[in-house]
Amino acid sequence: MDGDLEIIFRQSAFSHGVTEADIRWAFNTVESDELIQGFDNKYRLLGFNTKGNMIEVLYNLINDHRVNVFHAFPCSDAFIKSLSKQE
Image 1 (cartoon, rainbow, N blue to C red):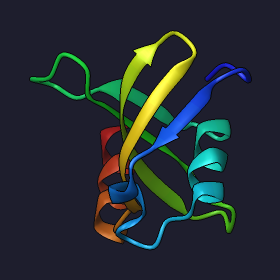
Image 2: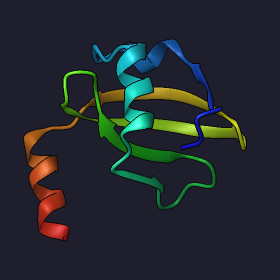
Image 3: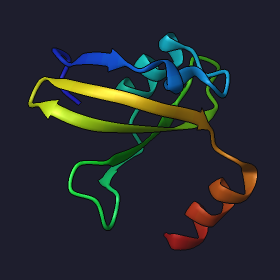
Image 4: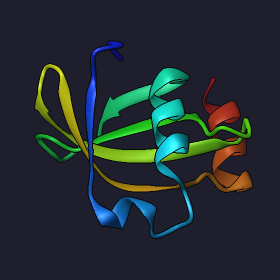
């Protein structure tokens, strides 16, 4: 992601204990960032929180320099293991 990115946070983004700092750090440590299949403007970003744990961030693009984060949560161990099997 571009360093000039403005992140808008919905309150729902924090419902699983992920902080604003964690989400911002995930956008700086992106491992994967893809459009979710079946949606026109819903993206899944995988990155790391401030403690080095992988988190999943769901967001919509507002424009080239602005995103709307509406959900974020820690990745489960099972999900992380499934990623290594895909490689």
